[in-house]
Image (tube, rainbow, N blue to C red; front, side, top):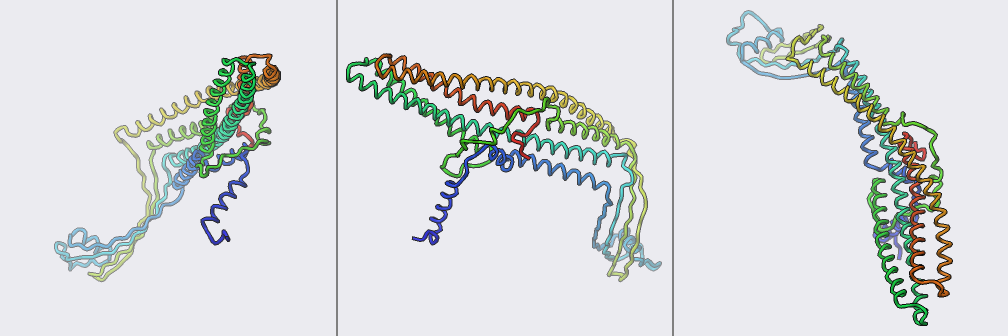
Length: 440
């Protein structure tokens, strides 16, 4: 049977091939996917676009404004009709101003306006918009750093969960082997019934732990896909690379402070924007000067006349009294400026503390990794000797249970310590304002 003649079968084969040939996930792949597909990254990019649109709006103040309008009217109102007659150059002294009759008029008008002076509001508004755009770009950079750290953390949490499953499975196999040996020795009258029951109970408890560990691994897998902004489209498990060069290449940063974190840079830009908004509010107390010019054409069919005309000039507007509205806006802008200043000061203190905490957390994780590696080696050697003694009948089942339990615990601690050391290092990069793995 040719699968190309059966579209459903062909699609299934292609899908199975795609999943079968999918490369295992590395930390670099996870970071790249999160930066590309995560909703948080898309939101940050949208905010940058919105901020750039604000710059375009602010730049409009430096360009002339052109409007074109048109309307057609019919009226017998003396005043309106008289204006249309004059615009059509159709006036004569024989007209009855009280009864002008039905007069129609088609008016076409084009107007050009240009702001000559706005009290500094246009300049300050453009500067505020530019500062806002730079702040949005820093927000995007901060979101990328956060996503990179979260992607690495989710990948390592998934690895921890799966290695925890493997460690508990090893414990189950060890208890099963010990229980099989105990049954043989019980039949030979060399093991007490109580010891046999103790092994069976411990095997059941370990199997229960295995079920919980598998559920935790499934949840960690869903969390990993969530960080990457992906839905689970297949029942196939997510494959993780056993050898991850990108994760091994993650090194201790040389940056010492968090002064250049994008959140702080963004707040400094927002502070500059808030200062300019105070200038915008104060500019309302200054006059506004505009130049304008217009051209109009009028056509009437009732009188069968038409004419055109133009108008040009300069206008000056000064707000003398507005009931305190301008004063209120100035006070509001100054209060918002004060808020941004305090937000920046608080952020500087908080990020400095966060960087120190991340550095201490990494040192602690590195020390725990060293200790856990030594503990596992000791526990494995102790378990090997204990099993040999138990098989020879020189050890009670309770002693074997204790040794196997400690081996499982030490393996789990080492698994957790290895992942936590990499997670702590990624968090240290983020706390110092760096993007883990050097992604562009």
